[in-house]
Image (cartoon, rainbow, N blue to C red; front, side, top):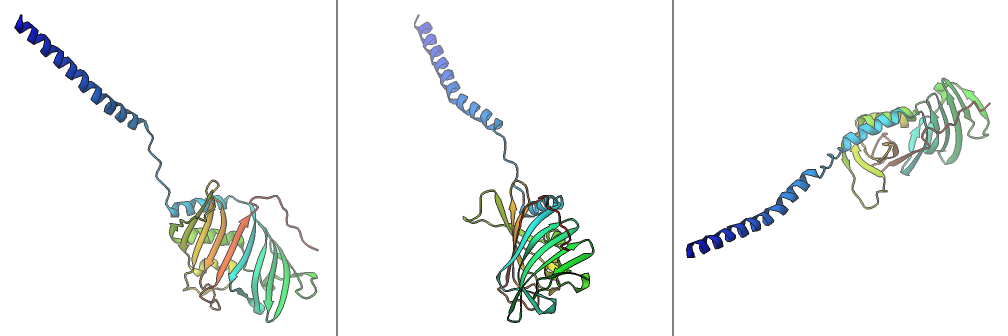
Length: 244
């Protein structure tokens, strides 16, 4: 009887130990099972990949508005024009432009419309429209569509900009760009210069919204020259028409 009683106690002890071991291992097994069900985060795109996506998205845009301003310095054009601001609307085969510039101490405003190979421009003194030969236009080089494609295609050493002032829904990317890639903005360039750029890209549409170009692009530029381009009104249905 004593032996039987001992075996009964031993059996109950083993049973209790097994239950205890099961209770200890069960949360671990559940935890591992749950962990296996949690989806892993998709790898983050590199800054260069985001720039490439923006190039594709902008290539599908038929029209947009643009503004060029200078936080510091100006852009030198033919005819001794020192351009301070330019903006307007561009579509596949046309450009509607307003610009402000200085000729020496004289401040002038001009407007220009380009449709295909035809160019009209206002006289900076009288404001009267006239058709001019494309080679006589101080804005003949300006091609915002090509400019955007060149900037996005030629940005080098792209890295993310992380700061507290970045707007929600936007991505800022810092990089360098050869000055020659900006010929569609300023005309002639200093080919050996490599200014820096900050690109602001919409995180949902990948559309390019802002470009900040810092540094020397033309030989007349000072080291602190800063050009700012803003883009908006993507694919707005606005037709460009001859002014006269």
